[in-house]
Length: 396
Image (cartoon, rainbow, N blue to C red; front, side):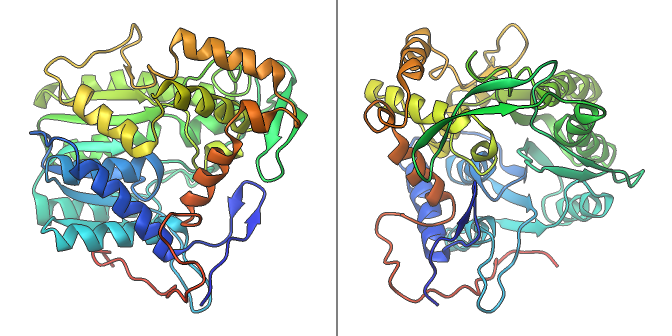
């Protein structure tokens, strides 16, 4: 079938298998071009099919030849209907990993559930014995608690007052004002329940109790802080409350891993175009300006470049550099004073008419469509594509 992008708001309803595969191959080639490390050999990635999680799986496999288990919740294809992009990404990764002689298996299911945790634990026992690293890169808007059955839904709202500022419709380029009403009721509690650290700790506790975590085991969860421009709706909003909980959980996990010398870290990553970030008002405008500045400075990174630097310069360091709050800061280039000063100046000038000149909206849009396998260089989108792609190592 000929597959074209069909968008609705900040999501694309279709995905292109060939484009997704090319994206994955490009990331693999990037890691292959970098120096190898004596890093982890057995890695579990929770949220392994897109964005930072996918980049982490690729970096683990091709920087230190790690065996990887990827966990995700993706929609498989049906005749005449494409799969979600993460499905095609995972299929492409496993196809190439197996070709290169690397162990790679995947589980498609609800990572919050006890059933998927049990299935993953058994796979580790059967195939790997233990794991060295667990990457927690889960991004979900809802969570059903595995014990109580209560369903929580996260919200993106400021805390304490209405937030008003500019954003951009990246499809049309229109810069417009947006207002978001403040959180109320159980909004904060629900968002923390979905995006905080409870599930991360549940994973570690269960794996540790089963004895499948190696000596000096490490686990890393991903977070974001961002600039003052976005803090009212992000870091000081409901999502920020969840990120605070996630970061506090790292210390609790480290305490529980004393028996094996294990450590838990939160890595604060750079603002990038992901399916999650595209849904956050203000962020698309901020990213389009940030991209412009960082590209001009020669310090722009996509997901794979960011994660390669995280693995090379941080996770494999003898003494991992941390900020005053105990976090890894791989957002250091984004948060440089000169970069943020330039973005702030551009923000004051950002209008529908000026954005094409002062921002990188084209780069934002390209990255957005790349997430779904579209607008990828070298792909012929006029050719028929087979939507019915299997994931080679998918576990039943």
